[in-house]
Image (cartoon, rainbow, N blue to C red; front, side, top):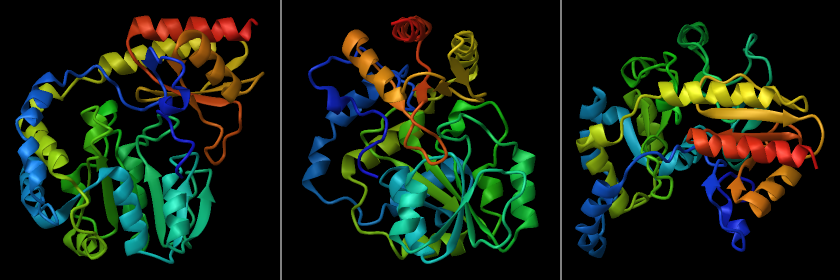
Length: 338
């Protein structure tokens, strides 16, 4: 999907955006040291990077406590999604909904038959693959580690694709790369740009056992990850203290915002275990609310009506700082009272 994602501030060039709630990125990370470092590395752009970034993969593997042949670095998590769908093309893929649309788009592109899954209590046994976003976008739900592990072990013939792009935004236990690579039927997707708040650089990676990684590597194109992105990756791994943060205050603030929104009679709020909050308007559309917030207050939210399984009343926000969150809530109340 090209149109219809969050972070679409470029559609509102005539309206300055003061706070962006539409992207699932928390921007309270200081990047000055990284940017200063990258300013010293522009000459790297005068040469090609490694066709496949094996050197950086070795460094990443050491950081994760796995082997270099158990990971591959990609141009964002989205490239990983499409590479996986291509590597295992023409399969029958179950997708737990509602969730990120790129799983279905990638599967359709590569000839998969898609089976929507709306109830996780009973997984279909007649599929080849199951795509799971955990923590989930757009609901913020984090499925219990023991439940996911049980699915994997009870369904050895099903390949589980687990997108953990938001793994740093939950306190709930989730499957670690060290445990995941031990399974022959698990592929994990990770997003460095989410955790480091750098979505424009496009940095992602996959972790899985070597047999699965080999299948993915056969479909990789050379130089898909540029020199500056790789240099940023190197810096982030070498300076974790600048990018690690405790998600607890963010999750607590999310619960506070959820409570305030739920107190508005015309809004329903989904429970969340992260900084992502999905809500539904009983009256009016999310697109009308979004348009009003941008034009009247410079606040950008995500119209979630194009997620499979949701309708045009749903909107999603990513929690920011308390002052900004309260401004958003007051503006939503203002729109409802019009």
